[in-house]
Picture 1 (cartoon, rainbow, N blue to C red):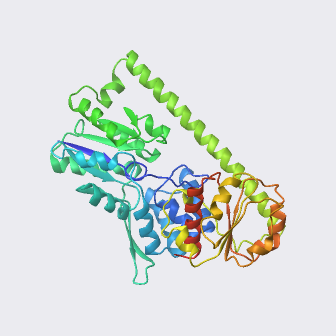
Picture 2 (cartoon, rainbow, N blue to C red):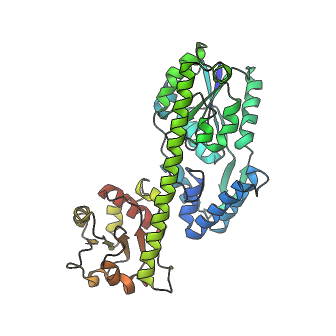
Picture 3 (cartoon, rainbow, N blue to C red):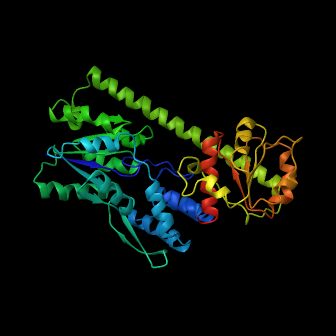
Length: 414
């Protein structure tokens, strides 16, 4: 019998949300900041910078700072639970755990995130052991009231494995496997008899500590069979003479690591470009004295998360404006047919009539051409109308519908 130890965010659940300027994507921590607004996002970004600069003595000190942000900005239980319900399992997770031989493997969850999220996986995947860094408790009015903290990330993750090894009378040198994705997982991966990096975005420092990298949990089946048969062991490969096969694996990891680094650099450059373009557009709209009280920020995750209320339902009670700019007009035309309460202006100056937006309760502006003349028509309108700049390069109609619904749900606290 062996322990099958899994990280949670980015391994069991997809971690789609990453604040610019941070080194970690997450399923919960950063999306919560996104729900609480731009100031909360800035504060959360600073906690990441403080962690990288060793300003915190322990991981729990970092967690406490994020909790202060959630408390100060009034995190509601309904929003928190919605994020948990909307979290998507990674590829192959449900199938793998449904067929896992529990006589051979004891699955274990160890997370530096919320125990509340791990509870969902523990129930769905029928897992006996789960350790999370933080559990939130809410008051009768639905606001964050208190919390329970537990050291279970970075170097502390192995402490839980050690306890279970003693409990089951296992051998720490050969009777457990670890699967994770983050930079914070590299410490426990270095101790594991067999460590597996999960996901195409697995952190390079984690990948370096692992025997293999997979992108679907079902790929684990063949690896586990070989491990049981003694054909592969992480520690043996790390110390054995460099065969052609192991050299090829090293080259594969080096190539993969370099690819990840390049992707991350490209992403940073792209995000920096978007921020610059967004600021330029706002300067045109607002002038030198920017008024942001009517603006609801958009996030890339808005395009992919399922909204609590879909756009068609929202449009039954609210009149919404959508202004496109230059490119993707065929998709904008498709939006026109969605509902009579969705007023679409594709951005063609010959069709532009600002007066048709007067009855709109909220206006979306899709950023795809900063210099378009449409901007000049919106200057006075946006100073006094709730609006959002959709500033990610996603033009598919279904993605736009999700983004608009998520932003409106957040703005009206639906």
